[in-house]
View 1 (cartoon, rainbow, N blue to C red):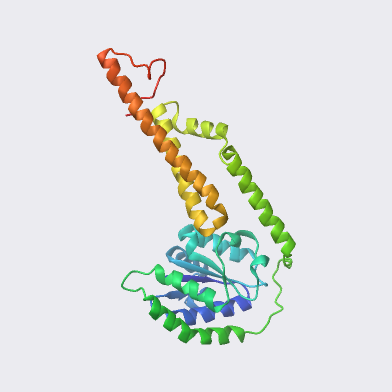
View 2 (view 1 turned 45 degrees about the horizontal axis):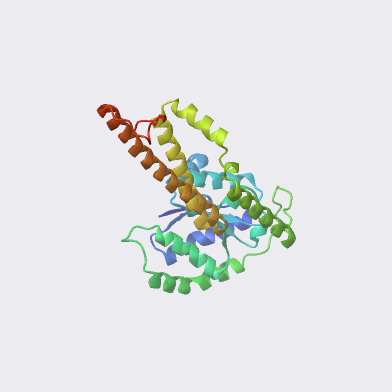
Length: 295
């Protein structure tokens, strides 16, 4: 597994280099990459970094108070998110709290410098390995417990730095501000649950579908199903990462199931209409209605 470790600034670089040396001791199949250490002399730096970003299976972004606002860190985070799943990219927070992180880094699940969080990080990497490379949980825990004191001592021994970030210092967010933001998110979700059109307005959905498939009812129905199914899948995945979205995901799932039910009923009615038309017999359920025929 190729693990791209992104850094910016002296402290972040020191943490990245330490992780580069430490990770293979726990999981031998991991191949960490740090640009300052792994680019040969004479190589074109930008090309080498771009190639490694493309080949990466996992991304670790070392975040400190000094680099949290730096454009380069956000650039590499964005590049990593395009080539690997978001669940396989994590900011490694070193001497900085989650409340101080801003911008694109917020979309990723962070790892703090604590024993349990770092173990979860390695368990995540281990779970993505091929069967023949993956360590059993007991073996992973044993190796981790053996090597953790080395990592802890090495990183705790790094000197504090007053290195300027090149960006305005990000103030810590108060508990009150965090609670107000969470309350507003909860209220927004309640409004969406009470009125699903806030999420997908009918006029927008109708216009988008018509522009996509024209006026053919069969294609319209198929495209609408694809949109609902994608919404269901996306919210289901997001709800596993954020339990606050479970109610919304449940609503999307019910909408998906209801659409299947209505589609099946439409197929039955359309088939009945065709048979009655061929036999010349009318049916009270279908007279006066024009059901799209299924093809």
